[in-house]
Length: 366
Image 1 (cartoon, rainbow, N blue to C red):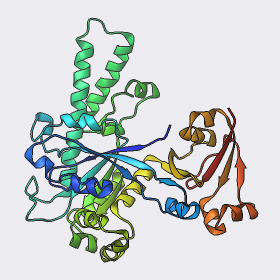
Image 2 (image 1 turned 180 degrees about the vertical axis):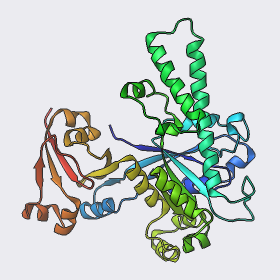
Image 3 (image 1 turned 90 degrees about the horizontal axis):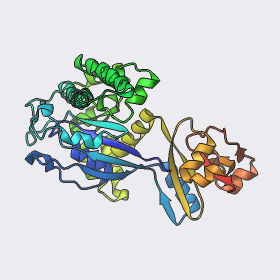
Image 4 (image 1 turned 45 degrees about the vertical axis):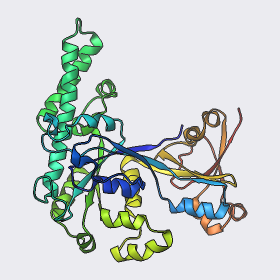
């Protein structure tokens, strides 16, 4: 089964979340949707740009090319007190509990036309606000489950164990500590596997700047964000959402000049995809041919037989060998024939650990 990354976009209102969503998905969502109190969630697929796929497509000229994809969900903006029903509340957060990753858009840009919901630009304060609202949402979920268990006619042995670990989680959150910092045994983690707590999830910060800030590389709170990201071991990227969204709509031949003016070599979707893959330990291998060039997303450390199963369970079940060519070797040789002439194609067994950029043809028999 093909693995597809899913990400939830979160943040305060008026920070450019939907602009960033449109930048990375080209979905054309209405950027004023959530100012009127609507609670719809925008959902769209984003193609993960990959210059290796571009090269392979040019080399093999297949009938179709399939890039890796990410599903993004852009939820309405949270405000301080959303957990108590302020703004549009926090009920829509359930829609991103299954996300692999949270993309937190933080406002740095200045604008007289778009007022900040709290009246001032303070990225660190905004990050804290969202952190607390996610924490409160997890507490609410846990509290409901605890009441349900304790209100039952009989507490089973399994429920008792679940209740114990839920109370441990609740106490942690009461101390304003996110659940990803709580040490749990494997048995305790198994009891919580279906909860999908928001404060357990990996997070990437996307700092949305204006053009002047982006070009200068400076904006309010930058030093604090750098320190926070380093302390938490998380990644942050900077985007000029409005300008980059406009550039992304231009024909490819016109983009280069405008990107150069911003000092960009790649647009936000590429930078975000790289950060997301790195954060989650993901990578791509490729299958190639005249019919199709395709990027497949797997976790780092995946062995060849398991990678084969991403394409089809029959290939995993009947796995014989993997014919492997390194991407850089193919680029240097210029063709598969050249790779074979130089003896750079390899046959690997089921335990071979697939590397990022491997081009693989699986031999199998069922």
